[in-house]
Image 1 (cartoon, rainbow, N blue to C red):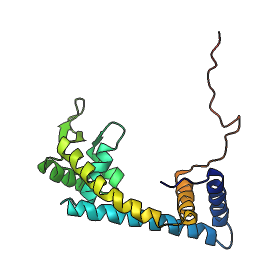
Image 2 (cartoon, rainbow, N blue to C red):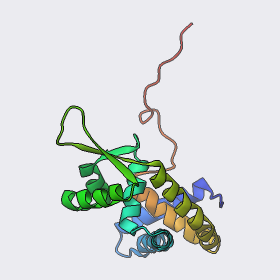
Image 3 (tube, one colour):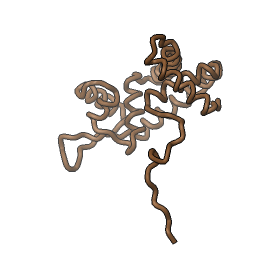
Amino acid sequence: MRVVDAGRLERRRTIAVRSRGAEDRHDYFYSVAEARYLLRKVFRLVEEQARRAGLDPLAHQALIQIYGSETGALKVREVAERLDITPAFASTLVQELADRGLVLRSRDGDDLRVMWIKVTGKGRSMLYQIDEQVQAQVDRFTQAVSESRTEAAVSILMFYAGVSLKRRTAEQTPARRRKIG
């Protein structure tokens, strides 16, 4: 695992963001290109491994989104939203996963129109297996990427997520209760 310097990473993010508004936007697009390259390469490795395990890459993403959600369960419309697909397509995808025993569907207790989806033990095992197979490949790939290129990629992901490594000022820090006594 590579450790990056937070100060250098923040400087790179700042340069990329400023470049976005400049006449010459090369620094911004350099970081965008590096981020997309890293993500695409890793996603391709994951997709290939999902296919080897007999799972369509979009179905694999559905399992990840459902299992990785805050509660470990999603509504069909939330699956659609997280995969950026239509609810009808999400419903078909969930049905295929259910037919394979990878997810369970259950009706909401308060609204019978709502269907909750949860990953089964078999689905979790498949996710774990794919992840284990991918990890060695991803490690080899990321070790070959220079520190500078990694920082460029991470800096633009920080920008996309609205994150900065700058210290908060007193006005930005949420009020905290003090213990008295």
